[in-house]
Image (cartoon, rainbow, N blue to C red; front, side, top):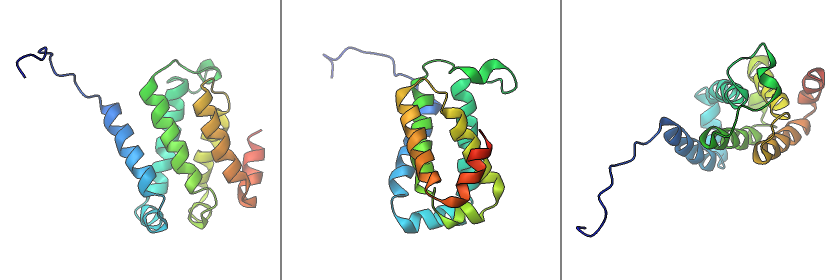
Length: 149
């Protein structure tokens, strides 16, 4: 211990905590029982809101102007968080709960996925395409997605 250089402890970022929680959640949601509990506890609402917020963060804060035309930059935590959210989203693509939950959650997911098709980050784009492909397998998602253009 005395031979190790003394470095001040590095502060842990809140983004790091969010990322670890989402990684754990993604693994837990592989089990159908956990997905059912997630839906019962209102997790789909939180998923839609968090994905929308992370999508806007990926492109910048402004929503009404040209901010959504290009990604903001390379914040690795923000991109990794977005990838985890997209991986979780695809697990619910064909779930009856998402379809029965009302239009708000599905619409938020659809809009976020459509916006993420503009991403310049390969992994974010790949995950968005996979989640979109999962959604398109279900007929109920096709019309709303097509309406987004």
